[in-house]
Length: 135
Image (cartoon, rainbow, N blue to C red; front, side):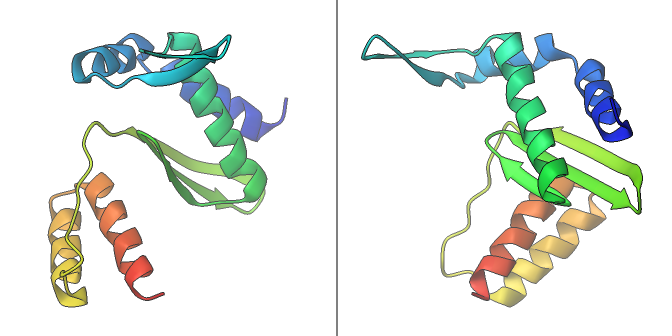
């Protein structure tokens, strides 16, 4: 097992999975599963939650990404040369939405406020929104 794989497993062990599952229950975050042509919505198991994050971390590592946002997860992975670097995993329970009438200046102001308040989850969303508005 290389150092990146060890880091991924360390991250997975450090998370309180019962708490993540409880957020799914409390907030009604359900996954859809298909069984015998029937779709069932239910709270994922701890094993399913772990597998989802493991797959996401492996994707980040394999693609050399520094950041990814998927579902309720935000992952920052700063790779420094051949070392593993810093990994930060955020489980978000709320999404923020801006109307399309927002100007680049108002997004920039909100981004600065989010960084000052250390609300990095919101800041990442604003950064992506700003990047998308330039396309």
